[in-house]
Amino acid sequence: MRTVNLKNKGRIFTVVNSAGKDTPVVIMFHGFTGNHIEAHFIFARLSKALEKAGISSVRFDFRGSGNSDLPFEKMTLSTEISDAIKVAEYTKRNFNNSLGVLGLSMGGTIALLTLSQIDPDALCLWAPAAKNKEVFSKGIPSLPPDLNLFDVGGIRVSKEFAKEVLSFDAFSEAKKYRKHALIIHGTADQAVPFEHSKELVKEFKKGSLISIEGSDHVFSSYEWSERVIEETVKFFEKHL
Image 1 (cartoon, one colour):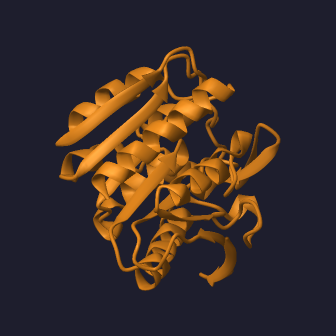
Image 2: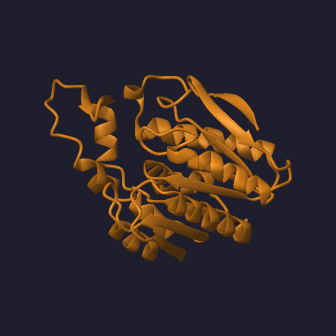
Image 3: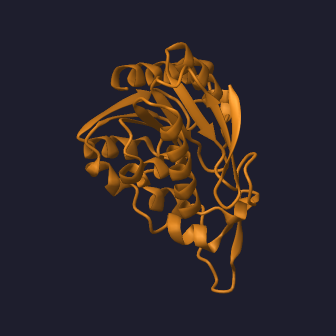
């Protein structure tokens, strides 16, 4: 494992688990307020499991999150899209094999919104906020014209973020993707309804959905998280 600081109008803190330059590689996009490790260390655990299977991985903190530059309130969907593309360019330069993308929650939003630019060979989405307008409208109040920053659960986000997350349409991008896509989602998710993924999987040409019975948004039991990791590794082993 090694760390890299990529540049994109600030530093993108990046962690590379390499199984070899000529191996398949998976890029991981974390969720809203998440980071390159994620809850229950699930991204780090997945990286180790992928490496054992001969698959490299690249995970990183979007600018505004974790160890990367910018305050969180400067984060927008546009900055995350830009970061995702920058990390994908780095990954393609440094690995000579097929490329997979994994997105968790709002990371799934970004994965969908960058499909045409990154063009992964396989796509895996964990509890994706594909219907981003519906998911985020619950937590974002109507904004007075003179209010540029507002509090969401103890952190501040910008009016620009609100405008983008309530107008960009990640869900519609799925129908354009012609390669294999896997969605994994907990049936008791209170943040992103499981029903959204039941609708989303129908949009993919080669989509499949695995339900984690009783699981919350971030797979908060060892049994759930281990199942998610196992199914994800199997998917990328087959399609990369």
